[in-house]
Image 1: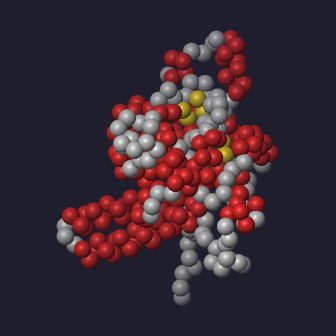
Image 2: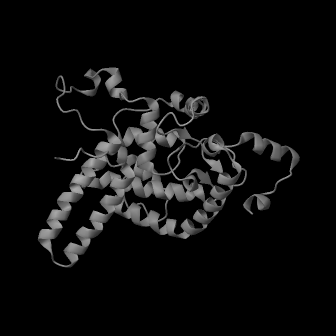
Image 3: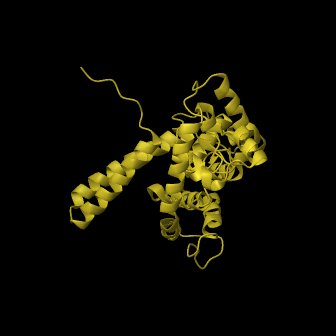
Length: 288
């Protein structure tokens, strides 16, 4: 008797599988095993398609009518039919790190169908916190805050996904730069995944990243080679990664010990206000 299919793989599991397959393809090619390399490349393409389906959603199988020019499509189709929180989840999953609403909107517009209304992003985190406090863990994930490493208070203007490790949802002095470089690598990798040409909107977004990373831009203004961007971003990330990770891990341990479930997701603004008012805690004390 056949076994029922298991649950679909998560984007993180699929990303790990894609990385393993890429390494296996390189090993097979280096060993001259062309048949094995072809088989592994087929598996890699399947994994990449599964990743696209998991993050972007499966394409419609039988559209009711041929898609016309953008101006002829219904407004709801142009905007995207997913709820805003799910669109934000998709964009953050692509980035893999916390981000500000403006970047989240830009990523969605460049890589995903539709757009995210900016006005909805401004109130999303408050709505998510209200939902969690009313019915904790009723949803599979929440759009939550990033915690400052010193006060464990919500960082202004940053969103994260509640299912991410707590170490990724806290931020110290180096975290903004480390996350920027990580996002640049992930978006550049996604832009060329499957060997497809880089779309103009994605090219413009990658250029914005590359123009702020030494050695990432080429001779032509406005265009960037994703491979060059990846190499330059990884080179600088190597400089910051260990120090940033160490501070984030210390802050995450303090958060687990000091905060309740809701505060670990949305921060502790009252504690931050008390400390700011009476000066009873210093940055050094927080780090111990």
